[in-house]
Image (tube, rainbow, N blue to C red; front, side):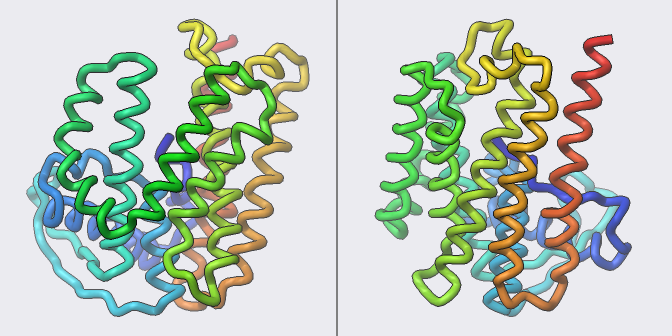
Length: 277
């Protein structure tokens, strides 16, 4: 369910990409330093966007470090750290923990169960810091399970819970920016849910797994309807984003919301079209 909220690298300036990469590497380093090397595989673009968004909205000061990493040992990279990146790392652990739990319940994937157990201690520590937030996220995931068990094809109903989950994560503080962040997260969460379903539709049908798009997939205008749904969700998300008073590096975030998410969509669509030739 991760990785759809990413950059369109070709449309970024070199300096902008370096800044994005510093947040990405910073989130990776924070995961390693706070929760161990094994958590770095949970790193994803969606929470990197959150780290950048909150860092610039709240204008927090970045601590900078230039160092090597295990994946790219021959080069040194700039890495940022701050309280918002730390928060994004915590939410990365939470979402990954619940995703592993979901995979274990649905498909009995042993590797996911083992990884979930490795995250258990970190998850519990984060749960103590954000008990209400974690409780709500867990309840929204439970509602998704109920919808899946009932084989619901009401797209608005089931995507709503994914939206509420992401809204809860984006709403960092209960302050003047809460409502706009909540709105942004809600529609971004729905967008991610539909993108994930769109990406997985063929595999889910082959395996007999649940997918909310299975009914409209049979229709001749499937691609047009999906694009319309995705466009509506991201339009509402960007409307909320533009209400936030972000000035510095705002073009990086606009690149993601206006271009990067569609770049990912086009890659999925192209793969599907080539598979149907």
